[in-house]
Length: 352
Image (cartoon, rainbow, N blue to C red; front, side, top):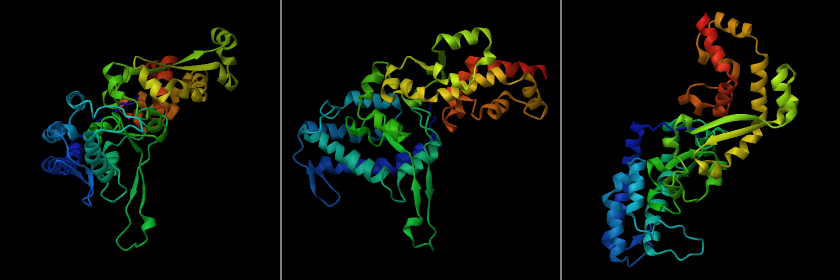
């Protein structure tokens, strides 16, 4: 539900690192009509003319596959044969072309070049250069990045500390193995979201208009609101809000409003966010109890912008481009807007 901003400068480096490797693998497989492992073990042999035709298409379009935008990737999916773009069950006998493409793009590409834990791993550079700090699918979890390299003098390998978020393939590599190394198909995410999304056919859901890719998300695509779930708290809201306290937390509900039903379905957002009613009741209590004089005092002490006051009071970010920096920032901002607190702050700043 949080938009990812592309890093066009790093994208060029990412593509250079992968295009040559994949191109060479495809070229060898086409020439030999078989796919070999690094130690020359035969993975797939006797590729048919149709199989070779498919590999030639992938080789010819390798730049588009690795670095193409989402529209380009969707066009590639439409062009590639059904034998590759198919969801197979674990025990299914997969055709040779699927095995060949999987070995080239997943085993030799993603696993060997991107996901590896070596110092040359592309995954760490990708996460670092995208700079996103919370999971774009849920905005609930930090996605930490550490790549602490040991000094030349330090011989202890344990001192080389690394951690990074998982990389989700928005278009699953189990169904679309030829997109396993595509820049726009690699989404840094928390382990919970990556696990929940699994191998659902996201391309089909996206094509049907029920799922939106993190690079295509707009600010209004997902909006949180609160509901009052019992008569007692509703009556207090209508008569004397000052009587509301923390005990009413379970009387609050959280609604996620969106046209993208599959984002909600994949990641169970509506259900999971019910665990954050405590945040909503805190915001409601701040709206009720924060005196105008306190905000006036903040303005006098140098908090001159809406954003500065918001961040001080609510310990979160206001601008859309900053929402990725802290968990639950989208929920916080939407509820604060619904309560009318932002409008009050704007008016007080104008008065000064």
